[in-house]
Length: 332
Ligand code: SAM
Ligand code: DTB
Ligand code: SF4
Image (cartoon, rainbow, N blue to C red; front, side, top):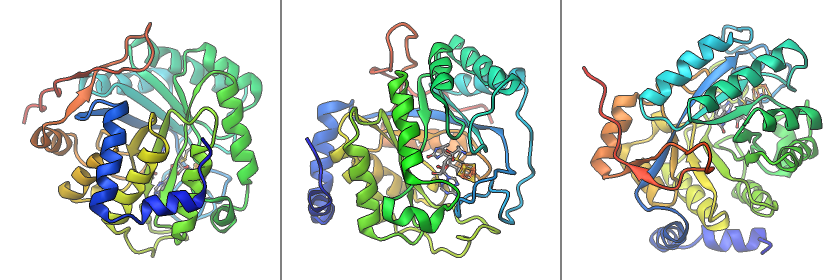
């Protein structure tokens, strides 16, 4: 079915409890009601990015205090992946502050990282900027589960946030990734000064992709000092809840990932996001360059809510569908 912004708006504007009921109904038709996927992020190449994304502390064009780092060695990345697995994560996401993926030795190194993460029995995701067809195929052959490439916002608002690349380039990379048989992970950010129409425009664009993305990260802006968006007021948690619910209803089979901004969210607001259909979080004390709730706090929250962590993927069977008990809380 093709979604329109008017339809998305009608859903969004429902009374909150009605919206939550609908989202939860859709959620239970497609996903276990109590399972959350734990994904751990690592910045494998940090800062000095040539792009001018207004929200991003890693853009070389802003004054955020991020120490640039070259592409990490494979063993360092795999040590972090192993630690993430041991603490209960089933997906390891590697982010690089590049406009487009490097050729040559650096790309080979990324392929090696992907193979290493897959050998651990984890899902592997990476986000390296734009890709060529050949790079997409090589990532697929290395076993990459998913590629993250966010639309970030609507086509109309995009130019107010990023001027160094276009929405069309973003969509073309997403198509290339899907064409190579890699799952697409694509979502966006709220709280950048966009309108509700922009938020819904982004979700409708994602929902009308064929196939729909396997996962949709919903980020609340982390307003980092030194970026052009440093002064933005925090997102109202109910707006985030509504965004998760509309994403769940428009993209019923996708994982909805409650991503950046959780450090500022109360436990109650996070619980409402889960009720609205969010079924994945970034798990680990750091996102790429900014903070994330402590592992212990996240495990305590999930336990208190009676939620379970998704089982690790069986490498032969694709994406995990089952659920397991939460991993034990780390020793004091
Ligand atoms: N350079 C690659 C790219 O842009 O596709 C990959 C890394 S980039 C940091 C991945 C995503 O992180 C962005 O698309 C954006 O949605 C999100 N992000 C970056 N900074 C953020 C912030 N301050 N708050 C919320 N989300 C942010
Ligand atoms: C996504 O949508 N959010 C993650 C992941 N994809 C790569 C990144 C969030 C980054 C938040 C800012 C930072 O830590 O630098
Ligand atoms: Fe670079 Fe990605 Fe940050 Fe944009 S979002 S500045 S492309 S790292």
